Image 1 (cartoon, rainbow, N blue to C red):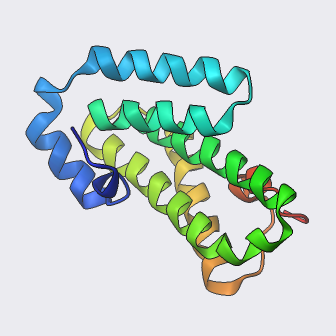
Image 2: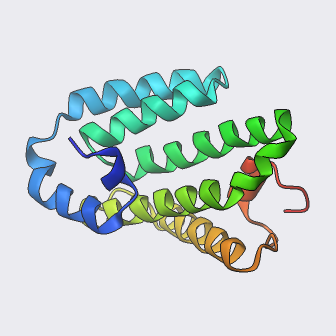
Length: 153
């Protein structure tokens, strides 16, 4: 299984897939992914994040990583709305999301499962988050920051 720590390290994702893709538990990954989809429909972002994360542990696919990033950003955005002092954690949150999108791209470099449009969107998502981390100024049209609930994005 891919560790939670390695899940946000694109090089570790590539190495894991090259060594383990053929013997990965794809059935367990699919079950966890489908459970995550059901939780996503109910807007249970915390549980969906965990389910999609479990899917990446069994078989790290680009789709599962993308779902982890988006569910986690939504969950953390809700926390930010409830707890105003939570804003101090934005760098960590955005950094983890950027790393997760980069892991999706890394997984796709091995598995080739993303469409050209999905790959381009994941690249744009990672880049706009990286830009935000550098400047602390929300770039326009940054979909992940909208999920996180930042105004003006």
